[in-house]
Image 1 (cartoon, rainbow, N blue to C red):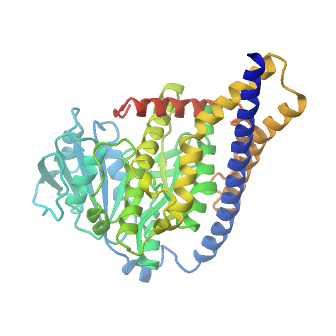
Image 2 (spheres, rainbow, N blue to C red):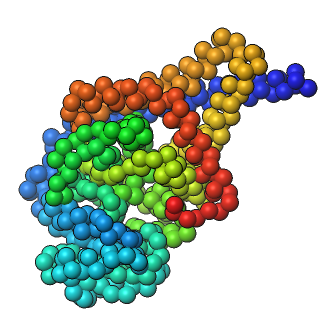
Image 3 (cartoon, rainbow, N blue to C red):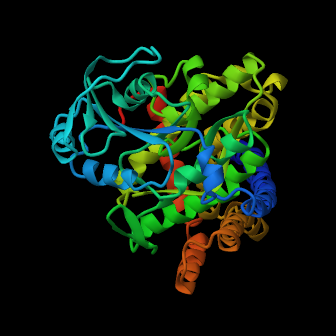
Length: 459
């Protein structure tokens, strides 16, 4: 019996080794593609500058959609920050999603808002709107008060009342840099096929802000937050930049994305009964355009920045990753028919298979591989060659890829100014693969289990 068990474990080890080797090959290839894409983008910056007045005069109008539920503590500061964004033609739609605290009262009092008429331009089904207000201080600031329906429903209300050809969906607890909208709109100016453009999300933990501006960029003291800084750099520089080059972006962060209003309405807007409304919309836009043979581009731009605060406790971070995994599974499985379908081009042939194998199934393979690794060591069955090979493909190569993502950041926009920042991030890049990565995989397995139990709460 023991012999049979060891034989099964041996065969599974081959699966684990193949998984880790192919995963690192994929990531290495994506990093190389990202490097080439970053070089091309930096060269293009000289031609497409957001401070070019002639260029900005031809920029399309944009509406910021900010859904909020019980955001009394930061709603005013968030909107004040948005009012400082430098863009020639921009409205702000603050959507109060049935808050039970004094979010509405604070907004009305601070910005001297009064009832006003705003025509509805599309008719995606949503929870009822109670009242619409306009600021006497800032004519381009509007507030829609509605019954609670969660984030996707609030965004759909904003879409229904959006009067501009483009809208930008942002989180109320995120802060955009002043030129972020001017930068993220560039793909729409360059190419009329662009239907979505997203920027980079950076960790605000440790940074200093004043009057809606970031005055000092620093790294967080909290180790969990430092791990997330490294994760975000790897995801945006080593991942999303490469998928953009391949025209196969499956995710534009819900905290900062610019959309063509007409196409989103035609695709049905955000789906209500979902946790990962941001990824699900992007996948559905790919499907809608592919099914209807519409030429389109979904872009990622590496320099427009939205700053957001990340979780600093294991419990909060675990809940976030549980939710992200549920959103991933919901987006992929509901559109599983796109898998390996040539009509969806690189999305169906490359991106969807990658996310299905390595993001959906990957955590299960990884955790099982680690458990077997320690089990074999415990019973004395692991050879030195096996131990070295496993650590090489499972840990060391991951460290190298993290360091490469950090190099991309330093070669491009260098947002962390001190040499000590670089040293700390290098150390984080090395140690995150021992413990933190495995914990992350465990949270994603829990997210898979939550999804199977049809858990839908936001946590």
